[in-house]
Length: 422
Image 1 (spheres, rainbow, N blue to C red):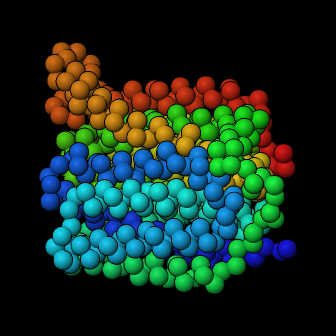
Image 2 (image 1 turned 60 degrees about the vertical axis):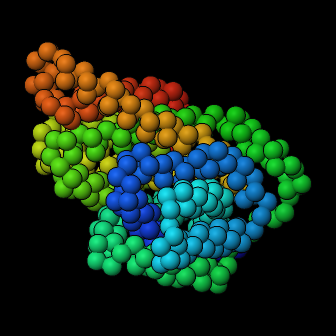
Image 3 (image 1 turned 30 degrees about the horizontal axis):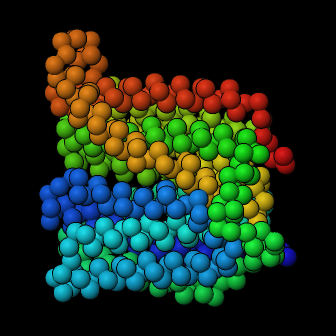
C-alpha cells in the first residue's frame, strides 16, 4: 500500500496544536500552584507525578500498544486526558481546586501519555514513507521547538489577563480539533500475529530480549540515558545560577534562545543531506552540545554570553534526534516497535528524575557552600562570587563529564558504523 505523506502531515499538525494546548495548561498550572503555595518543592512534584508513571509503566505500555488498535489507543488516551483537564476547569470555576487534585491529574496525564506515545510512534511509522523519515523527524523537532517558544509567552499572557480557566478553555479547543481530525484519519494496522497471544509480561520481555539481541540500539539508548542524567542536572542548576546572577528576565531570554536554536536546528535538519554515518553524527552532535553551552554558562557573566551558549548547545539536538529516529525506525521491525520503544522510554528516561534531584542537591548542598567558603581565588575569577557561582562551577563540571561520556561512546559505538540500508 502506498503511503501518503499528506495523511501524516494532517495528523502531525493537529496533534502538535493539541500539544501546544496541553503545554499551556501545564505551564499555567505551575504558575497557579506556585502563587498559591509559594513552594518550589510542591511545584516540582507536578513534574514528578507526570514522570513517575512514564518511567514505571512504559515497559508494559508498548506490549499493550502492539496488541491493540493504534488509533483507538490514541483516541482513548486523548479523551481521558481531556476529561481530567475539564475536571480541573470545573474545580476552578466552583472554587474547589486543591493541590492534590493537580497531582492526581498530572499522574493520570502521565499514564495516558505512557500508553499513547508508543502507539503514536508506530502509527507514524505506518504513515511515513521510509525516504521521508529524516524530514518528518525534523518536523516533529520543529513543532516541539515552536511550542517551547510559544508556550510560556501565550500561557503567561492568558493567565495574567484572563485567568487559568481561559488557558484550559484554549487547551480543550485544541484537543477537540485534534480529536475530530484523528477520528477521520485512517491509520493502517499491522497484520495479526501469534505474539498477541502472549501474556503482558512475556510481551514486555520480548522488547527487552530484542534489545539484548541488537547491541547497537541498546548502547544508543544507554548513551542517551547518560546524556539525560547530565541534562537533568543542567535543568536544576540553570534557574539557580541565572536568577541569582541576573534575574528572571535573563532566564526567560536564555530559555527562549533554547527554543529558537532548536527551531533553527529543525529547519537545517530538514534540508541538509543524510550523513554517511549516522552513529558518528549522533556522537558528534552531542559532543558539540556538551562542549559549548555548559562552558559558556560556567564562564559567562551576562545574558548575551549565556544566550550564545544556549544556541550553540541546542542547535545540533534536532539533528541528533533525527538520526536516532531513522536508525530506530529502520532497525526495529514495525510489529516490535511498540514494545521496543516502550523499553527504550524506561531505560532512556529513568535518569531524568534522578538528575533533577541530584542537580538540586549538588547546587544547594555542595557547590554553593563550597564556593561561599572557598578561598581559592582562581575559582572566584573563573566562576564569580556570591550566590550562583557554585552553580556556575557545577556547569563546568558537567561540561567535562558530558564531553567524557560522548568520547567514551564514540569509541564504543564507532565500530558499528551504521549507514542507511543496514
